[in-house]
Amino acid sequence: MLRRPAEILLVEDNPVDARLIVAALGEGQVTSNVTVASDGEEALALLGRRGRYVDAALPDIILLDLGLPKKDGRQVLAAIKADSQLKRIPVITLTTSEAEQDILAVYDLQGNCFITKPTDPDKFLNIVRAIETFWLSTAQLPSRIQCQ
Image 1 (tube, rainbow, N blue to C red):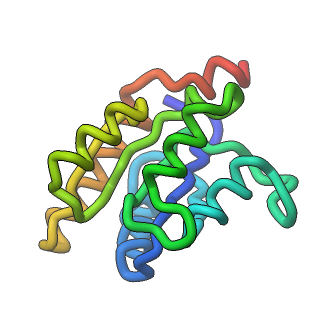
Image 2 (tube, helix red, strand yellow):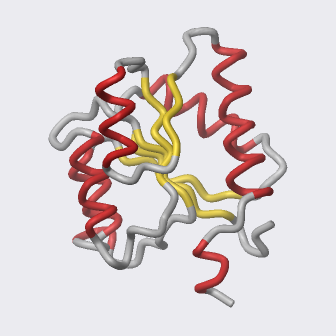
């Protein structure tokens, strides 16, 4: 378990989904700071600590939608995994897609997990809670090693 609040980057262009995810994480067992980027370019600016994000904390995990404006989720994932400072951050793809080519593309780009968003709000909240439980309470994260 993390000793400090978990830093989560949520890259999601749908404001309803973003609010649901932030609310579910806020009710969870792990204290977290959630930063929301609404498009791929904003996510990469934040991760690169450019412009207004110069003081941004690097996330412990990234929740990434695929269907983003400006730069799509595949482009964002490719950029993250190509960057030596970012490539160890777990990226959980949380998207509406069930397409086989999207699933394969995410894993080919070294994504850590592919989850299709359910349309039922209760199931959606349960998935977010499961992500929190596994990634922030159970899994050992590289960011925990780096900050000790």
